[in-house]
Amino acid sequence: MKRRNLVLAGVLGLGLLGGVAACVGQQGGGMAQGQSLGGEWRVSQINGAAVPAGVEVTLAISGNQVSGSSGCNRYNGGVTQDGQAVKFGPAAMTRMACAPAAMAVEAEFGKALDQISRFDVIDGTLQLYAGDALVIRATR
Image (cartoon, rainbow, N blue to C red; front, side, top):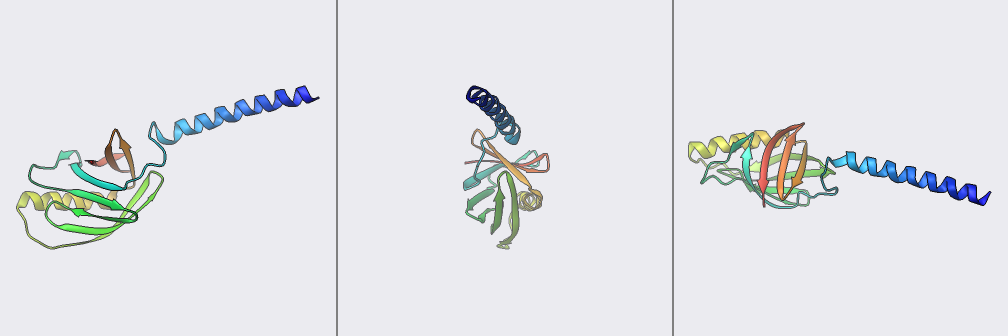
């Protein structure tokens, strides 16, 4: 009887191990689990277009706060993260006028942040998505 219980426990253990491995493999599509948005990021692309030289767009994330440069003005607001899901809240922003190129980038960045629903950090690059569409790419 003891031998049968040991064999059964071994089979169940292997089944559970296989099930856990399958779940881990599906969860992140190769992403490291428990990733954090925390830190400072410099945006290099918005909706597939490179941020023009001389225009600085940044995300500085600490806890549930985000701040930075939106291309022309400074902003700050809230951010919530739950696993790979992320949501940026309404932001307060300064109201300076800048060159047309910087103003255009700022408008695009603001619209993009409103759409973000999840993120990945792959090889040190932050990728922010709206559904399955890559919207913002940034590096440290």
